[in-house]
Image (cartoon, rainbow, N blue to C red; front, side, top):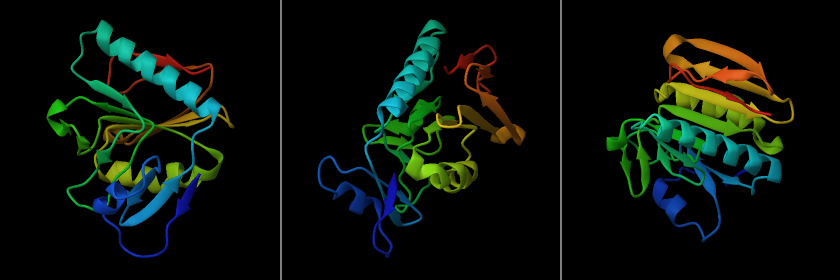
Length: 177
Protein backbone atom coordinates (compact mmCIF):
# COMPACT_ATOMS: atom_id res chain seq x y z
CA UNK A 1 0.00 0.00 0.00
CA UNK A 2 1.24 3.45 -0.84
CA UNK A 3 0.64 6.50 1.30
CA UNK A 4 1.57 9.88 -0.08
CA UNK A 5 3.64 12.08 2.22
CA UNK A 6 2.62 15.71 2.70
CA UNK A 7 2.84 17.95 -0.33
CA UNK A 8 6.18 19.38 -1.35
CA UNK A 9 9.07 18.45 -3.59
CA UNK A 10 11.34 15.83 -2.12
CA UNK A 11 14.68 14.47 -3.29
CA UNK A 12 16.65 11.26 -3.02
CA UNK A 13 18.36 12.83 -0.01
CA UNK A 14 14.97 12.75 1.77
CA UNK A 15 14.62 9.03 0.94
CA UNK A 16 18.02 8.30 2.50
CA UNK A 17 17.04 10.34 5.56
CA UNK A 18 14.05 8.07 6.35
CA UNK A 19 14.28 6.06 9.58
CA UNK A 20 15.71 2.54 9.29
CA UNK A 21 13.13 0.05 8.12
CA UNK A 22 10.85 2.65 6.56
CA UNK A 23 10.44 2.03 2.83
CA UNK A 24 9.30 4.61 0.33
CA UNK A 25 9.59 5.49 -3.32
CA UNK A 26 10.10 8.90 -4.86
CA UNK A 27 8.24 9.72 -8.06
CA UNK A 28 8.49 13.19 -9.56
CA UNK A 29 9.46 14.63 -6.18
CA UNK A 30 6.61 13.00 -4.23
CA UNK A 31 7.29 10.43 -1.52
CA UNK A 32 5.10 7.34 -1.42
CA UNK A 33 5.46 5.16 1.69
CA UNK A 34 5.15 1.43 1.20
CA UNK A 35 3.47 -1.03 3.54
CA UNK A 36 5.13 -4.40 4.13
CA UNK A 37 4.29 -6.93 1.40
CA UNK A 38 1.91 -9.82 2.01
CA UNK A 39 2.97 -13.45 2.25
CA UNK A 40 1.52 -14.16 -1.23
CA UNK A 41 3.45 -11.21 -2.63
CA UNK A 42 6.68 -12.50 -1.11
CA UNK A 43 6.12 -16.05 -2.40
CA UNK A 44 5.60 -14.80 -5.95
CA UNK A 45 8.59 -12.46 -5.73
CA UNK A 46 10.89 -15.18 -4.38
CA UNK A 47 9.81 -17.69 -7.03
CA UNK A 48 10.24 -15.19 -9.87
CA UNK A 49 13.66 -14.13 -8.60
CA UNK A 50 14.77 -17.76 -8.26
CA UNK A 51 13.48 -18.72 -11.72
CA UNK A 52 15.13 -15.74 -13.44
CA UNK A 53 18.42 -16.16 -11.55
CA UNK A 54 18.54 -19.87 -12.40
CA UNK A 55 17.93 -19.11 -16.08
CA UNK A 56 20.70 -16.49 -16.16
CA UNK A 57 23.10 -18.87 -14.38
CA UNK A 58 22.30 -21.77 -16.74
CA UNK A 59 23.00 -19.55 -19.76
CA UNK A 60 26.11 -17.98 -18.19
CA UNK A 61 24.32 -14.70 -18.83
CA UNK A 62 25.67 -11.25 -18.12
CA UNK A 63 22.38 -9.86 -16.78
CA UNK A 64 21.84 -9.52 -13.05
CA UNK A 65 18.54 -9.90 -11.18
CA UNK A 66 17.62 -8.11 -7.95
CA UNK A 67 14.59 -8.35 -5.69
CA UNK A 68 13.26 -5.45 -3.63
CA UNK A 69 14.44 -3.62 -1.73
CA UNK A 70 16.83 -2.58 -4.50
CA UNK A 71 17.28 1.04 -5.53
CA UNK A 72 16.61 2.10 -9.11
CA UNK A 73 17.41 5.68 -10.05
CA UNK A 74 15.38 5.89 -13.26
CA UNK A 75 16.43 9.30 -14.51
CA UNK A 76 19.44 11.53 -14.19
CA UNK A 77 17.71 13.59 -11.54
CA UNK A 78 17.25 13.56 -7.78
CA UNK A 79 13.43 13.35 -7.72
CA UNK A 80 12.87 9.75 -8.91
CA UNK A 81 13.77 6.64 -6.92
CA UNK A 82 11.87 3.35 -7.12
CA UNK A 83 12.23 -0.15 -5.67
CA UNK A 84 10.68 -2.54 -8.20
CA UNK A 85 9.82 -6.00 -6.91
CA UNK A 86 12.17 -7.53 -9.50
CA UNK A 87 14.77 -5.73 -11.62
CA UNK A 88 16.86 -7.33 -14.37
CA UNK A 89 19.82 -5.28 -15.56
CA UNK A 90 21.90 -6.43 -18.54
CA UNK A 91 24.16 -3.37 -18.80
CA UNK A 92 26.13 -3.87 -15.60
CA UNK A 93 27.86 -0.50 -16.03
CA UNK A 94 24.59 0.94 -14.64
CA UNK A 95 25.21 -0.83 -11.31
CA UNK A 96 27.07 0.38 -8.27
CA UNK A 97 26.76 -0.22 -4.53
CA UNK A 98 23.74 2.10 -4.29
CA UNK A 99 21.73 0.33 -7.00
CA UNK A 100 20.91 0.80 -10.68
CA UNK A 101 21.44 4.18 -12.36
CA UNK A 102 19.20 4.22 -15.40
CA UNK A 103 16.48 1.93 -16.66
CA UNK A 104 16.66 -1.81 -15.97
CA UNK A 105 15.98 -3.97 -19.01
CA UNK A 106 13.07 -5.75 -17.31
CA UNK A 107 10.98 -4.77 -14.31
CA UNK A 108 8.32 -6.85 -12.56
CA UNK A 109 5.87 -5.32 -10.10
CA UNK A 110 3.61 -7.53 -8.00
CA UNK A 111 0.35 -5.73 -7.29
CA UNK A 112 -0.75 -5.25 -3.71
CA UNK A 113 -4.36 -4.24 -3.01
CA UNK A 114 -3.37 -0.70 -2.05
CA UNK A 115 -1.03 0.00 -4.97
CA UNK A 116 -2.96 -0.99 -8.09
CA UNK A 117 -3.08 2.49 -9.62
CA UNK A 118 0.60 3.01 -8.87
CA UNK A 119 1.62 -0.13 -10.80
CA UNK A 120 -0.98 0.04 -13.58
CA UNK A 121 -0.66 3.76 -14.31
CA UNK A 122 2.03 5.81 -12.59
CA UNK A 123 4.86 3.30 -12.85
CA UNK A 124 3.76 2.09 -16.28
CA UNK A 125 4.21 5.65 -17.57
CA UNK A 126 7.50 6.22 -15.69
CA UNK A 127 9.04 2.93 -16.83
CA UNK A 128 8.02 3.45 -20.44
CA UNK A 129 9.46 6.96 -20.51
CA UNK A 130 12.67 5.81 -18.82
CA UNK A 131 13.23 3.23 -21.61
CA UNK A 132 12.66 0.05 -19.62
CA UNK A 133 12.47 -2.63 -22.32
CA UNK A 134 9.90 -4.90 -20.65
CA UNK A 135 7.49 -4.41 -17.75
CA UNK A 136 5.33 -7.08 -16.10
CA UNK A 137 2.48 -6.41 -13.72
CA UNK A 138 1.65 -9.55 -11.74
CA UNK A 139 -1.79 -9.36 -10.14
CA UNK A 140 -2.42 -12.30 -7.78
CA UNK A 141 -6.01 -11.19 -7.06
CA UNK A 142 -6.94 -11.36 -10.76
CA UNK A 143 -4.44 -14.18 -11.37
CA UNK A 144 -3.12 -12.38 -14.42
CA UNK A 145 0.09 -10.96 -15.79
CA UNK A 146 0.13 -7.85 -17.96
CA UNK A 147 3.23 -7.77 -20.15
CA UNK A 148 4.38 -4.54 -21.76
CA UNK A 149 7.13 -4.86 -24.35
CA UNK A 150 7.87 -1.19 -24.87
CA UNK A 151 10.46 -1.71 -27.64
CA UNK A 152 7.83 -3.44 -29.76
CA UNK A 153 4.96 -1.24 -28.55
CA UNK A 154 3.16 -4.42 -27.57
CA UNK A 155 0.95 -5.34 -24.61
CA UNK A 156 -0.21 -8.87 -23.81
CA UNK A 157 -2.23 -10.41 -21.02
CA UNK A 158 -1.67 -13.87 -19.57
CA UNK A 159 -3.35 -15.90 -16.85
CA UNK A 160 -1.64 -17.72 -14.01
CA UNK A 161 -0.79 -21.23 -15.21
CA UNK A 162 0.15 -20.06 -18.74
CA UNK A 163 3.71 -19.85 -20.03
CA UNK A 164 4.65 -16.19 -20.36
CA UNK A 165 7.45 -15.58 -22.87
CA UNK A 166 10.17 -13.24 -21.68
CA UNK A 167 10.73 -10.64 -24.38
CA UNK A 168 14.33 -9.78 -23.54
CA UNK A 169 15.32 -13.44 -24.09
CA UNK A 170 14.59 -15.68 -27.07
CA UNK A 171 14.26 -18.98 -25.25
CA UNK A 172 12.77 -18.24 -21.83
CA UNK A 173 9.25 -18.31 -20.48
CA UNK A 174 7.84 -18.34 -16.96
CA UNK A 175 4.70 -19.98 -15.61
CA UNK A 176 3.28 -18.37 -12.49
CA UNK A 177 1.00 -20.69 -10.54
